[in-house]
Length: 145
Image (tube, rainbow, N blue to C red; front, side, top):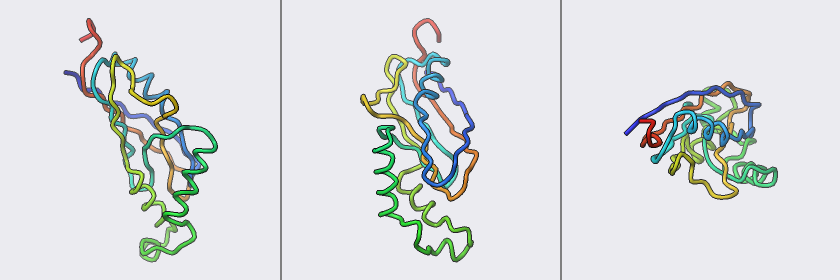
C-alpha cells in the first residue's frame, strides 16, 4: 500500500466562484502512478467547500441559487454580529457542502460519472488563496511500487 499527499494552491475570485479541479487531480494521480485505491480532496478552512457537479454554467448557477435559498447572503447571522465580517452565510454554505470528498480510483482513474467533475466552491465574500490537499491511499501501478 502507498500513501501520497500533495498540496496545490489556487486563487479564487470570491463568493460563488467555482473551480474545476478534475484535471489537476487526474494529472497528479498519473504522476504518482496511482493504481487502485481512494483519492480524498480537501480544502482547509471554514468558508470553502469541495464537491462534485456537472461543471457547466447552468448547473453552476443552479447550485448558487440553491445555496442562496438555503443560506441567503442578505440576512444577518449571529456570526456577523460577533465578528462583523459579513460572511456568516459563507460558513453555513461551506458546512452544508463539506470540506472534502473521497473518490474511488481504479486503474489510476477517478470513478466519476460521465458529466461529474470535482470542484472547489468559494463561499467567502472575498477572493482567497486556497490550499487544496489531495491524498491517495492504495496501490501503485504494477511495476512501479
